[in-house]
Length: 149
Image 1: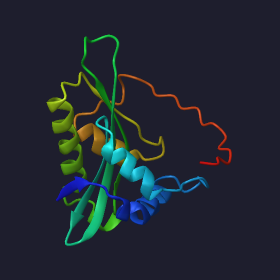
Image 2 (image 1 turned 45 degrees about the horizontal axis):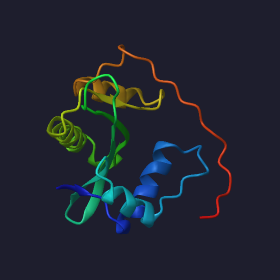
Image 3 (image 1 turned 90 degrees about the vertical axis):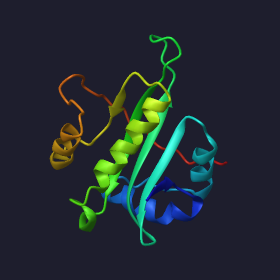
């Protein structure tokens, strides 16, 4: 079953994200942030749960687009399925779910970000209809400074 993540999922998601970005020392998934995302009409943090266990996740942000009337576009990140659960259609179900959300919100496109080293994931994304040769993504990481909330 695919559902929106809740604050109770923060520990599992933190573990997933640490596997996605093992060199990052700044990963800290706050339960309050998950609740904030859940309340935001343009951000979606989904998990795939089976028999009480979370086996995968995906994050979708809908962005305002100045070029196509009032149609947004989607940006997908943090696509992860546990190693034991890969090959069972969970990743495909998560991508299809995001597709449905984007179609229902009249998006013009979906952009997907993936680490350059995840070549198996790239093949999976291409099989799901994503084209990795149309655009080139650039990221600039900003040094994380302590914040007092």
